[in-house]
Image 1 (cartoon, rainbow over the protein chains, first blue to last red):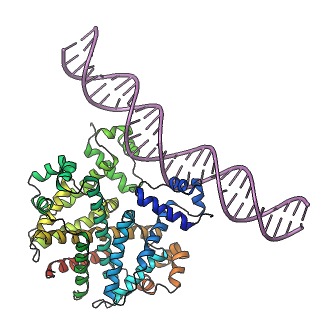
Image 2 (spheres, rainbow over the protein chains, first blue to last red):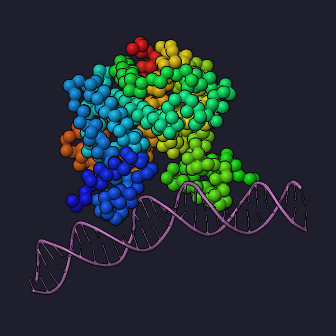
Image 3 (tube, rainbow over the protein chains, first blue to last red):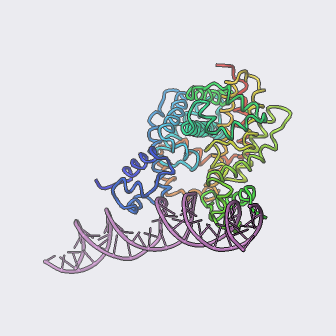
Amino acid sequence: MPLSRDKIAATAIRLADAHGLDGLSVRKIAKELGVGPMRLYDYVLNKSELLDLMVDVVYARIAEVAQQPEWRATVLAIAHATRDAALDHEWFSDLLGGRPHLGPHALAVGEATAAALSQAPSVHDIDDLQRALGALNSFIIGAVRREVTERRTARSTGTDLTAFQASLGPYLTRMLETGRYPTVARLVIDGTHLNAEETFKHNLTTVLDGLTSRPRT
Amino acid sequence: MPLSRDKIAATAIRLADAHGLDGLSVRKIAKELGVGPMRLYDYVLNKSELLDLMVDVVYARIAEVAQQPEWRATVLAIAHATRDAALDHEWFSDLLGGRPHLGPHALAVGEATAAALSQAPSVHDIDDLQRALGALNSFIIGAVRREVTERRTARSTGTDLTAFQASLGPYLTRMLETGRYPTVARLVIDGTHLNAEETFKHNLTTVLDGLTSRPRT
DNA sequence: TATTTGTGGATACACCGTACGGTAGCGAAG
DNA sequence: CTTCGCTACCGTACGGTGTATCCACAAATA
């Protein structure tokens, strides 16, 4: 089996899933494939092109759900698929929004999203579409990013309050006890541990409603 | 002048502004300060703590505008200040949402945002607040991130259409000419070059309206 | 004066992305 | 059958990174 872009991308994804983007190096991928590090550069121009490859593989999965009968269902499906993908591949959220996504599958997702949004009421001309697309993508990117980093810190500190205070405690609890951040303190202490998926869905429909119900300015 | 966290952060910010986050290294900061690389570790635990330091300096600037008479004005001011800061310090957008922002000034901004949002109509209990805060921050993070990467690619490819096609052309124009991405193609070709700040403001008020006008689910 | 303490510096390690030169096989041209 | 050019593979090497560790020297204390 003679090595290929697909195989390189696949093992790179496996390693990134296991050890994060920081733990991903050309050398490790090569070792995992049983070849010298430089072999990869016969198939890829840069490391960043390798990252683009990985990203587009993930987009391929997202693109699979991008065909729905109704525009709103399409948007919802894409957004949730993006979130799911980022939860499966946390490094994906690190790359999300950080570079232009121009791979064929990324373009397919962009096309499906744009086509869906263009059928929304209150999206009349192309400027409306551009704005709506921007708002939607901004929300998705930010929400996914936030959720992933939250999950990471929760994992590294422990999820319950006492463990959290023990980890960030010396600093953060002291900060919160200064009384200068009462609302934040209330959020940290009294805040229910909301279900992440429902929060995402809730906020997504909020944004979507705002997008479609709003009269032209 | 004996070196300090503030001075380190200040020159690190200067270097990052000039050469980006990738071009920032402990050694270069040290050289700029005229000391050995290891001196910095007397003031900072990690490089990531150094990044946290830089981030909090930027938050200090944002926090300055966080006191407005009306809750909506406060939110708008913070959002725009965040965007301005990210445009001045593009590396800031790379860090935005990527790690928890726990510096004193970041907490101050978070407090101000939370306090403002808690006064919005339709934000009744603490769960409402948490959701609204999440939605708002998600949008801001994503929007800023998108705008910065867009500006970067525009800078590296040239802004007008022909230069853009010349740069991405061999690949992207071929992609668009396949006809598989008609909506995206229309956006790229017919899309007016919208004013970025107005788009941000427009989408921000859209999100904010959606946040406040929406009845409870 | 002798001794402790802390501060700045140099060196070293493990790792990174990748430029470069070289070689072994193989199909086509002479 | 020989020889050429080409492709696919390989190893080594360079300049960079973050940071652990040791060391020298100066100041302060006993």
